[in-house]
Amino acid sequence: MKLETVEDTREFGRRLAGVLRAGDLVLLTGPLGAGKTAMVQGIGAGLGVQGPITSPTFVIARVHRGPLPLVHADAYRLGERPDPRAEIDDLDLDASADDAVTVIEWGAGMVEQLNDEYLQIRIDRLDDDTRVVDLRPHGGDWAHRLETM
Image (cartoon, rainbow, N blue to C red; front, top):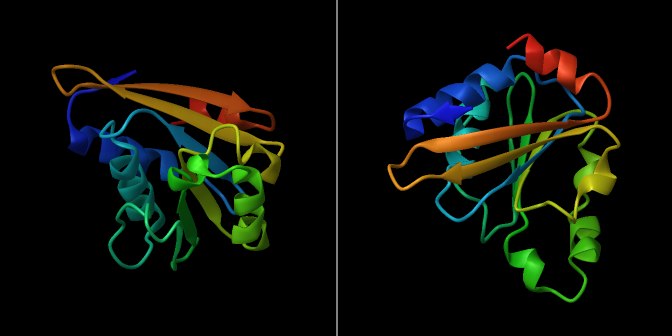
């Protein structure tokens, strides 16, 4: 699917929030500047969480309170470590996984063990700033939920 603007990316995130529920894991991949954080901003708006959503690159993870909490993590800096999976384990993201939606940027190959069922979203930005979004459901009822969006 193509999203023409950053606001379209946020709006897609808002729509996606409508099918998310506690315990969901969403992995966002794509190059720098593709729109991963914009997507999370839309998800947060759709979930009704409190406070602004910014990239958690330097704090690694943030919890945003709301009717359905959002855990927003960024594994970008962890990829430089000898064992980034151990660092993910140290973040204890699975402690809140059952009660929140967990969205992790740059987590592919590091966090899939947190949940057997997850949604992977690849975002690429074209030269004209159009975003191309590829949704890849893994297990569970993800494919059915995405059809209802």
